[in-house]
Length: 287
Image 1 (cartoon, rainbow, N blue to C red):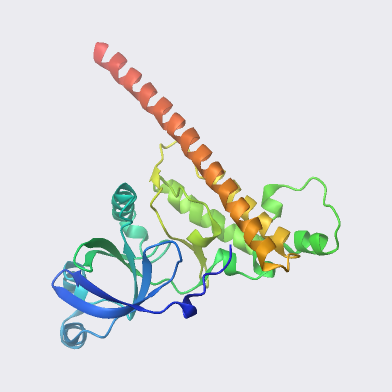
Image 2: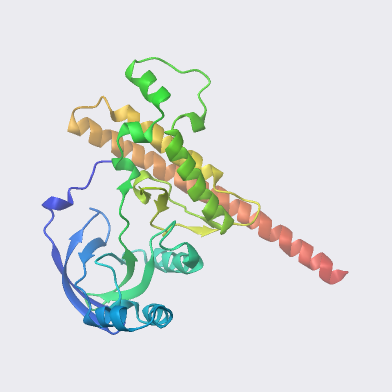
């Protein structure tokens, strides 16, 4: 994926009403095709007063009740796509379900705000780190595979788990294990939806997420993401920007098709599980 050059995008002025707080602030768009903005928040006098004078247990309770006055220095404002409102509602519900993972494995969600008087928006914490698509190849790809690629040699019997950098693969496994244990599939396994921090991978963007039955895992999603990682070395030798853009356009179209196929397969699994549960319930009722 080509990096979106946000430095060349002029900030826009956003009017945000979040709870009892109204803010009019410059916002920097951080993704070309999404309604996502990075905003620097001025310190709140109320938040400062509470931090100095109110005991910790009471302060924590008040912060959860009125998060608008205790926002971090930088936030992400993610507005609802007006043509896809169901995805926004789905993301809100997933953040609620994964509340105890917020600030650790996923961004913290402070709540929903109103942007520019009419657009619902999520107020999220800003994750300090590097999106996977911006990682150096040495951090993304295993040394063995990267060396073979640069030497133009072929590795035989290569498995999916041999492709990523081992440390990154371990962090991805940990992240997907957490999602599986909490019964959620991410739904959009692309490199720009995962941010690598100092000690873990953080998942973002849950518009396409759904719930998992207990006997289904995120293994297929991890394989899809590893496939994305492997394809990054295919563009290393492309120097022409037009060739690189064409490659990523075709690649993203293929990724979208794979994601759609995975969603269909998952829905079939969910339907089969639900049908089996219904039959068991009927048999138990009859007994």
